[in-house]
Image: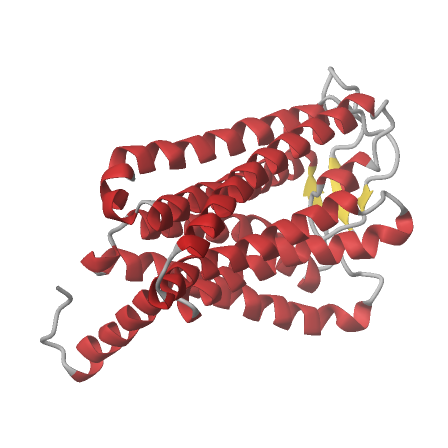
Length: 319
């Protein structure tokens, strides 16, 4: 049966291997991932709600943070729901089209988050280096354009990568040694010449990572110089606290991305690829709200105020 006349693929469904080689781990992994997924969704949704209900948090920083939480919810949903399904059901199949859709949507949100973190670095640069004109420089129109640019870059990069997969032929094994439709795992099943796909992945990965890191490093280099020149320790402490949460999120996210780029495409490396991908798509969406809430005084004060106003003093409203 032929799926696509253009690439002459005979494979219409894939089988996600997941962790089926470790049957005794299926139930513990399901409970672990379900817990992480629940905390992730609740935490990120909480960040969105908290930064919306308190007028004090209607600033560019929290505008970007809401979009970061939205991205975390979206790409966590794309990957985690299928992962949980294959851990509890015997049917581990996913259609060819479903696999391509999962990859496209998940890839779009991951690359968009990469650029969103770069946008947030620029926001921190303006906040620290030009605090008096911060609200003027980071106008709502500019913030909207920056967010739209991040989504556009994510969509274009993901569309290009997905197109490179659609051009391949799949006429052999249909078993994907992964929890989901990850790029290198899909490539390993193709019986086509992989040069175009590999070069496309290299160019897109290098472009997105280099652009994102260039903006981040440039912004923080200027921030560091500005902080060093600050005369008072109070200003130094405030500037550091302003950037600490974002730096933590960047370090974790790009550390996992770079690890995935550097892992050689050998069978012995598949376990590491699986773990790194699961960490990227499940753990990071859970960690981001914890990082920004635990290290952010404004968010913690808003949560305390919300609890007090709703439970202890129902008549109190945020002002």
